[in-house]
Image (tube, rainbow, N blue to C red):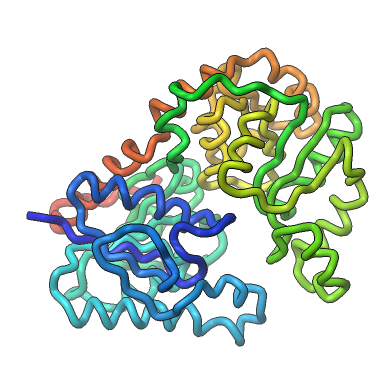
Length: 385
């Protein structure tokens, strides 16, 4: 019997996204592999999504990511409207075997509230699990709602009630890992790359100070709040500083930019992004938070670029110290590790990615979880520590 899964990607960005979009990129990576395994996929997203699927449902024509920058009382209806559309579909049809939900907080709460007659739900946790204590602290989805993490470290930090609904973790994957060992060996430049949204948790201010102190060229690539290009941010003026990420950038990062040794490129996407990542001597992750998933980490490895990072969150699960990267608990040591990263072998990084982080590996793991959820009465919850 064909398994039909409603894949709920949410209303914020199309799938695949045009540039930055972590969850939407995960969905775009997972779905083609699931379909190759015989799963029928109904995608709940926005109408501008272009990912090939068996069926698409949507409430909004375009992604509503811009609304996330507005006050809560102006934006709170967006995700709810999308979930209401999903619920209407689930009430109106009987061919959905399982819902795989990726919508933060409201997806879990809404689908749990549907009651025992709704399909089983696997809710993937892509974010910091300390964010929603009121929801997670006493969550009870019975045997119908299960959750999975994107790393073991993420689940270990989850509230007990949420961990009791967990069926394990699935590491993120990248399509870049599929051809990792067939690609020509990358030619390395002298620069170090920090890839990702610019905010205090990612620690770009630590990176720029290290670059100036130790003396290595540094490139920052990623958006600042809703602004994807330096010209966009400059044109936004002082009003943009209402966004906390913009204030952080102006106060802690921008004073160190000189356009030469330390540069911010804005969002870099597609082939340009891959070329930039493959050419770096190392990627740097000076984290201040417990990184849950690490998409940029596995992409770096797939392109043969060693990782230098604070050993927080999922990093010790993804990076083998001394082989595919260098990890430390002390931010002051990161500069020395950046210089030592030249001694690591890029092919070891690519070999690790091709074994562990391909889309096919991720899809097989999720298919096993789907089958576990279908055996609702026999699928034991993991016991909280």
